[in-house]
Length: 326
Image (cartoon, rainbow, N blue to C red; front, side, top):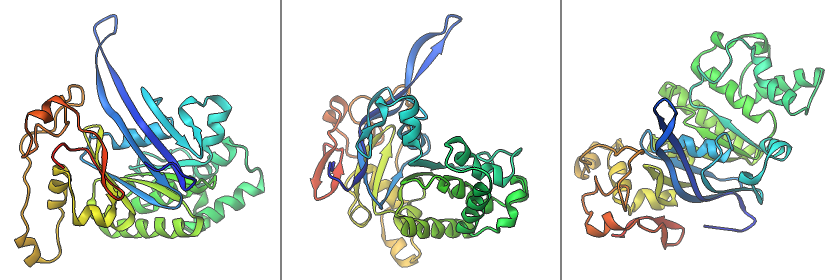
């Protein structure tokens, strides 16, 4: 992983386990291994896509980076500071530089608050504006996301899903952050609206030099918006590479299976390619397999895959993979 001045976010050996309690006395009997030792970096101004099946730990990764969950182990370095070690006012100050766009625009906006109250809340909480300045800032933010400033007095239920997500984007921009974690921001929207939101995010990134961690499971969208892509499976990153390199030459068996399922608009090319069907179900994160997490579904796994966890290593320029067979 890089460690130069171009890196805005550096995640090292990040672990997040959620305890499982049972019985009257609430005794811990296990843990859900949501994130289990991942490392990656995000450079200033770039978009890193984080993809994988539902339940693989993508959203948990985003929330741990923002310190909404305190990690079990590991480090999150943002602008040179280790967020894991920060508390109180120091952490609150750093959070001004990091924001999140949530997945569900119907659940992430308070139905009892007007649009103006929703967007201005970060400004008030962090004490960066007051009085008429707040009203002016709300109007500017609504215009930035292509909404009429006259809508500021309305409530979330008066908007469509795409408009609600634009309100969520405006709220995320309120404090002028450098890093925005996009947690599947288009998965709950119609396809035509998805394109509009993606275009909006790209325009905002170019205008304000924003850095995105784009969490998604739609590989076509990730290919369009991301510069690099990390593939996650059952709490671990199995492959990380430049977008074009990953899509043209996937090395990990899981990445190959994922990409074989992406529809191709050319029926002739689609008929020629080989579809990789994975057998079995995804193991429980409360009881993950020994060694390689993917071995129970991998078509090329052998004895060493069950005994030793593969090292996440560079196999060529800017291409990292965790597989004994690569």
